[in-house]
Image (cartoon, rainbow, N blue to C red; front, side):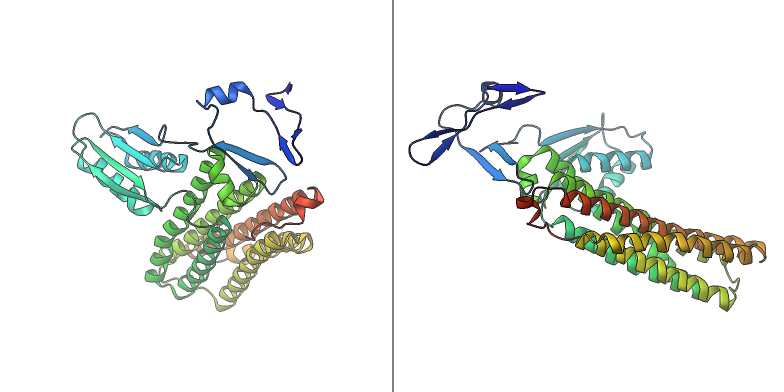
Length: 354
């Protein structure tokens, strides 16, 4: 046996005519309460490695999480705490207060359960609410989540620009409300990746390598931030009120929005196809958009104060969307290089696209 840096080396031995065997480290076997006759599962990975785990890996222990909170907690702070607990991936969350749970705290817990993918109220008592994850760690492939997020972000951006042009507050409000849908998908994907890092069986079920999980998590974060900027565009409807945008400026902002949206789509396409040339074109386009933004900003600065502020918000958000597309393109380049650097036998089998 060789041991180095926490790794245990074992020589492959051959018994009989065609059977290969490898011994297991005693410390690993004992720590997991295993013995002769117990079953182990082996899962080949796309990167050429193999995952081994016992039949009852990640059993009942640690699946229930007690979350102690106070009725005096700030509502926003409590909600963010629950999101963090959700991302940690526990199948059962027991939220408990010292003494009777107040109506405000209970409302935050119920709102949290309604907004997340998976948690349902399993049990309620005077002092606690128990939430159960009813969908499990892998009901939807991660690339499908990314595609869904992109569809939603693209639709939100188009509607935000329509609301801006028409000064339609109802459409603007709808865009703002839909931001929660993007958030919940991002949190769900983050929970999937976190759970996969903790449980080898979940990682195997995702059919992705750890670098690919990281890639998709980064892409999800970028899409979530793009959604935030579509909300900011929608919010300018209230700022502008009845102030009329000159038709030429409105047309230019529409064109800029279309360019930014196309850049996001092309960046995700380059991520799926490992297309470095397209990714570089997206980055170049984002840089060109910066120079164009400076020209428009000078024209906007000459307008009446309220109109100038609202238009500047829209212009800044469109520029940020273009640069987030550039971030996605850089992620695509990194992924393409990482896959190209793998051994030929593993790189030949492409993972699911984004």
